[in-house]
Image (tube, rainbow, N blue to C red):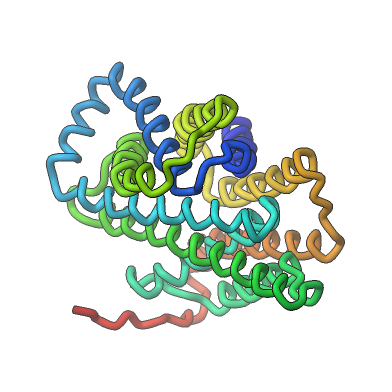
Length: 311
């Protein structure tokens, strides 16, 4: 629990280092991928089993699937970093945390997973939270347009992040499965660096010394070290604990936003954050109960979304 809490707090500081780097979002993502992958390579270099796993993955179709998930992941980063131009870091991060419900919807569509009425209810509460956090009634004219653009960028980013998870889960469902988390994130970062490399030519902006310092912290600490900490914690915790502690991330982002930029959180935004967190935690608890033997034997038939075959 301590490790995961630390990892979530580190996640909550990402927006600060992105903004303070002063670089365009695509350039930030490129260097985050390069520096983060370099840090992970240093860890893999001293682990013979992981080196072998990485070689096997990159020379098979598994590597292509994981690289595809990496494309979704880095596009998600680019969009959410762009959203910081229209929303505060804290607001964007809180809104992003309806992602579990987007993941559930994608799982129902593409993995034929069940979607219960309780889940739909929790999702509804989560989206009410978005409205309370965004406060569209306080904006007008151009401000309304910027607000809506920021919200749309954040929700599309959350959808891309969920899509990256779906791709990996589909790979894990195959007979040979997917490689371990360390290999997965390393391949994703390599793919991300390749995809975003054109940004260096498109945005030839000079990065200051302070900007480089923030990029190195973002890549080594808030990417390589952060993922190592989080993946070390996951196997030791239950799903419910992981789901609850995930909301340390947006809470940390709100606090960082307040300390660094003086962004005040209103009462309605606090209510919205509580609604999103409550919906996420409620969904975790509901899923835990649904998977228990007693509930499995007694529950009624859930609502199922049928997946259409596409060609």
